[in-house]
Image (cartoon, rainbow, N blue to C red; front, side, top):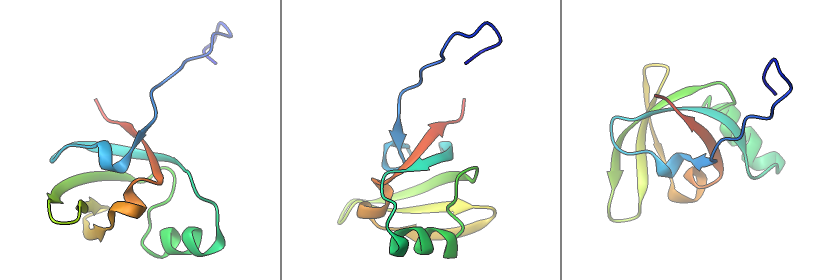
Length: 88
């Protein structure tokens, strides 16, 4: 809520909603299995991380993203489970 107690609603976007060269901040994930969370931690895709979409591979809709200066290939399956807030 804001300082007046009003709720601020935002549209949920997933990582695969970004367009090339757009940035987003990870705010949550849709899956909470230990394997998925351990994977995200190992590639540093945790809430608060700011990512930039570099490229979408048309063949399988996988993504090339940049996170903290490191390029990372992310599958379509994973990108659909990461909720982001688009940067303005």
